[in-house]
Structure formats: structure tokens, C-alpha cells
Amino acid sequence: AEAENEAGGRERDDLKQMHDEVKAENTELRRHLGEVDSALAQQEGALAGMVPRAQLAEAEAKLQRAEQAAEQREREVQEKELKVQEVKEQLRGLEGEVASLVEEMRRMVPQEELARLAQEVADSRQLSDDLAKRMATAHKEREVLQK
Image (cartoon, rainbow, N blue to C red; front, side, top):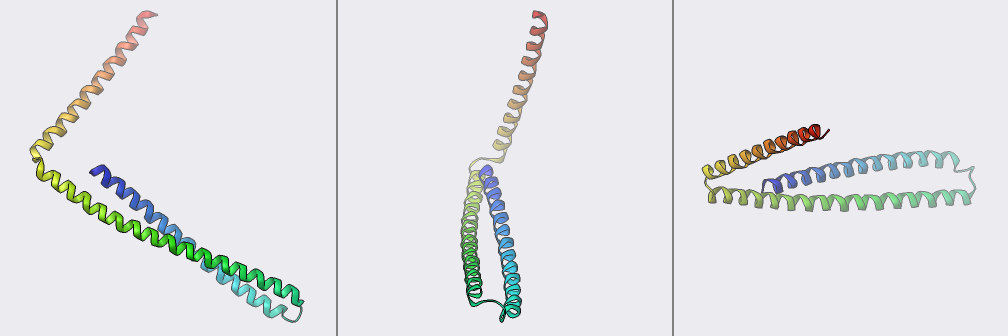
């Protein structure tokens, strides 16, 4: 349950980071679009009488395509933000379930029993580590004797 809770926490952190990155990218796109609009307005005013109609129409078409691409990107960002929200809500539900399961497990198994089992696991790990060290030492000694 704790591993699931940690995994949920990591997933929530990853989703938050992704959400923040999407928001930052969205802000940057909006800023850039504002700069493009401003620059085009200045150029349009300065070139209104000097640019042939065909070039002006081509520039307007490019601007329209750029605006459509920016709008599409905005929709994609909004969709991602919705997905992030949905996953956050799912995580909240899972966190509640995990907390309930942990509490239920605590009620089912006395704390003394949990402490005893944890000590047994720690003792077993220590014995395993000691045995591994002894085996490594014995292996080295055998190699020395064989030489």
C-alpha cells in the first residue's frame, strides 16, 4: 500500500510538472502570438501603399495559417490540461482508497505484530548480508589458496 502511495505521489508529481510545462508553453505561445500580431500591424501600416495586392494577400494568408495553428495549439493545451485534471481527480480517489486500505490493515494486524514482523525482516536481511560477506571472503581465500 505504501509503494502504491509512493507511486501515486510520483505520478502526481510528474503530472503536476507536465501541467506546469504545458501552462508555461501556453503562456509563451500567447506572448509570441502577441508579438507577431504587433509586428504585423506595424508592417501592415507601413507597407499598405507600397506592397502589391498579391503579396499582401499572401501575407494575410500566412498570418491566418499562423493564427489557426496557434488556435489549434491552444485547443491541444486545453485538452491536456483537462486530462491532467482528470488524472489528478483519479489520483485523489486512489489516495483515499490507499489510505482506507492502510487503515484497514492497521486495524486487522496489531501494531506489536507489525513491529515483530518488521524486526524479523530486518534480522533476516542482516543475516543475508553477513552470509554474503562470508561467502565473498571464503571465495577470495579459495582463490588465494589455488594460486
